Length: 282
Image (cartoon, rainbow, N blue to C red; front, side, top):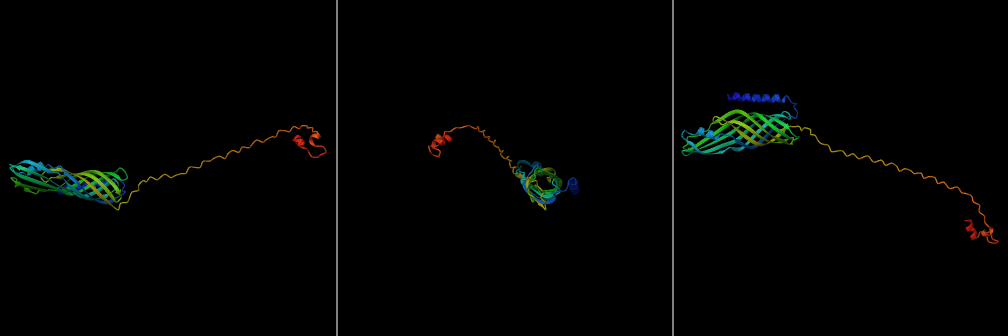
């Protein structure tokens, strides 16, 4: 029954991916692979699990929980275009535990490990040339392995149930392109799992991933061109105006009659003009 359910979910996920990508031009397509590490946190009902393992007549006097652990994932996918990708991967959500004391005196310890595979449709919304928002929805097939041990009055508690189950997973995050061959993601994902003792719970994973595209062609980027310096046109200075001086018109000479005495010009018995005669002539 579980196998049929898994097959149906995987088929629906694959069909949904094909229908979505057919509506977009297939530009910038490439394969990619990656690895992510981070922390997981489980919302496991430890009280319910503990009570399901306690023998009749025992009660709990105290309990401590460990709901966080290191987690990692390996994945690969195909980017159909800048908006959609189909991604498959393996995840290990770590282990979660509790330790309780009982009355009569005893202890019950439990540990839960979760790992599995997933198939997701990943949507990308570019915000800038390098920064994008991510969203994902998919199916995951997880194996939950439990281990319970008892001491003292609870020494009869000793079991290791496990359960495989197929369910949904969702996620959201951000992506930054350092180069065409190297991307960085930050994501939070939620997995719905079976706790192997009869109920379902959620596990969140916060991770940072390194993504390595294969054979990706760099999309042309818009580059702002530096402004071209254009020298201003030289200012045209008009030639200085040529000023033609007004012609000088000589005043008409008015003839005058002058009378000189010979005695005033020449000395006696001399042909040369004397000093007083020169002054008179001037």
